[in-house]
Amino acid sequence: MQQMTLHDLGQQRGPGQLHDSKFMTAATKRKVLKQWEAFLESGLKKDKFTKPLYNHLIMHCSFIAHYDIHGFYATYFENGDDTVHFLSQFDDSKGMPKSVEYHMTYWLTDEEYYDINSEMVRIASKYIPILVQQARNRQKTRDIELARLLLAKHGMSLSEEDHGTT
Image (cartoon, rainbow, N blue to C red; front, top):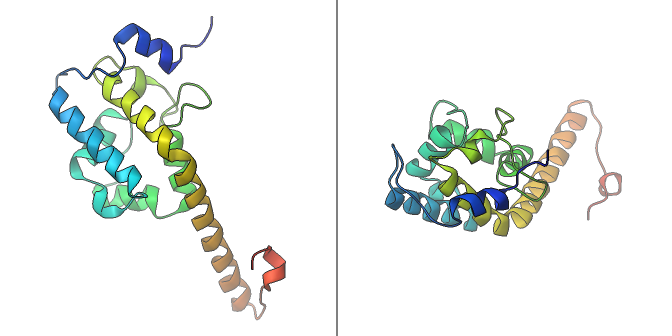
């Protein structure tokens, strides 16, 4: 049996249309989608990470709360590797994206929230390549700084030639 894609689901359910669900109106879904795009467009700035967006992620996208909005932000957006991991949940370039915490697709195929979550994936596709590159660059810089600190602790140093940057 062939695995279903987001395109297949969209054809079945009506692409781009938001519907009222038990805990979220179509208007609220539109508001969260605007906040999602503003957050991505900002380069994942903390002041653009809103409470309604956080609530949607933890209630309808299969993310763990990480205590509160600040813990969630610290978990996923302060470390480049973690940011790449977070973004992978919204990247459909390799098929149906799975929850990064539970490794399943229910967050995306659920009847109540398929509409907003598939739109989040669609919107994210415009930003993921640059955000992933920025996160990887941030991680590289952080890793090199950590290596320098660890070497200095032992009376050693790292020259620019050792790590290929200028």
